[in-house]
Amino acid sequence: MERTRCGPDLDEKALGPVLDGKSVQDVQPLYTSVETAKNGSEAELRGVTIRFEALPGVTAEWLDRALECHSARRVLGRIPASSFPNDPFWLPGNVVDIDARSDRDGFLVAVRGATPDVARQIVARANAFSAAHPPAAPVAASSAGTAGPR
Image (cartoon, rainbow, N blue to C red):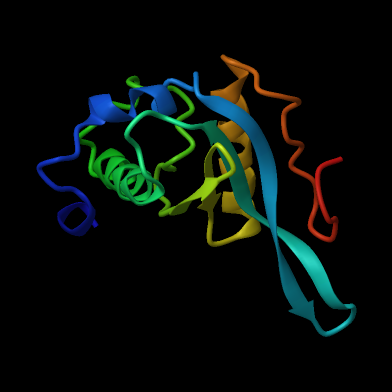
């Protein structure tokens, strides 16, 4: 992942306003619909969506690639864990899926885990990450089967 997502133009310092939490506007749980034999379909926690304010000169495509590079470098140990406490863009021992897109006057970044347990870890980290600069009420990691925050 590092070879494909990181290039010479990607510098961790450029991600500063994202990684320090100051540009966070909102954190919400991310659910996906899962087919079940008993109930037909139910919502399952998959991670979070984090809304960031617009950043000068930053596109959604660049942000997506930069966050994926950051995640790969964290997994490889190239960025010390103490650099960004509760960094929601990686999990020790797990791979997270990151998708950034433009949203109104900012960005919406989805961070997904492979299982509901990993998703709960992502939610906990994202809540702690945004707590330093509270955007809104923290997300509650609720059990599967609900359609949103409680």
